[in-house]
Every structure is written in C-alpha cells, then in structure tokens.
Amino acid sequence: MTTYIAVVGAGEPNRETDQAAEEVGRALARARAVVVCGGLGGVMEAACRGARAEGGTTVGILPGTTRDDANSYLSVAVATGLGEARNVLVVRAADAVIAVGGEFGTLSEIAFALKIGTPVIGFGTWELARAGASVEAIVAAPSPAAAVDLALALAASRQPKSGSD
Image (cartoon, rainbow, N blue to C red):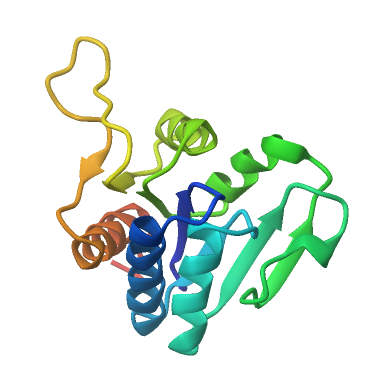
C-alpha cells in the first residue's frame, strides 16, 4: 500500500524552511510516498517542487473553491471551499505528518494529527509535550532527511499488514 505523508508549514516563503521542505519532498518521492499538503505556497509549494523533481506524486487540499490558487507542482489539486478547516483533511489523508517551521495554521494541523493519533515529526517547528507527560508530543528530527526516515517508519508501523499470518 502506498504511504501518504502530509508536509505542513508556513504558507509564506522563507528560504530556510523552503529548502528543508524541498529536501523533504525529494526524499519522500524517492521513497515512493505521496506528498499531501494544503496546496498553496511556502513549505507546501517547496515540498511539492522537491517531490515532482524526483518524479513523485503530490496532492494539494486547497482552502478555496477553485484550483486556480494551487501551486504549479501539484499532481492533484482538490478545491474544498473549507478555508482553514481543510487542515483536518490534510491530516486525515496522511499516515504521518512532517511539520517544517510553521505558524498557527501549522499548529492546528499538528494538534489535529495528535488528536487522531497520527504521528507528527517536526523539523524546526513547534515544541509540544502532552500535559503531565515527560515525552514530547512531536518527534523532533535533526534534519529533513531524518524527518522523512522517522515519518516513513512511524507510518509503516501504523498500517495494517496484508496477507495471512
């Protein structure tokens, strides 16, 4: 079964996070994972650019009612008309989430993912711990490549095994 990894982060371009997100997208495509994102600019566009450069598949779940706002690196653009509520769909579509940088929209995606039990790997993003827990809620990665490795491993551990036992 194909693995879907959401890449979330700020929609405004930033050289540092865009470079990291592009590296994440490239590595995900090389691993044959589908990149899911919000379909706009910044981290979303950079991850898609990286994935497409490696021949990968990218899916953008857009906030508006038209595909005209989609970044040019999407394989599939889905216009939802849901505004920021589409963040739930981005996370629900994923087997794991990689957060690169980000602001409050990213924080909402992280929170939704954690609420439903989807692993979140962070690179230069929010630091969160569950109340009363000594373990971080977001698995911090030291590099974009490590974030991808962690996301793929955690996603694989969540997917049902096929075949007979």
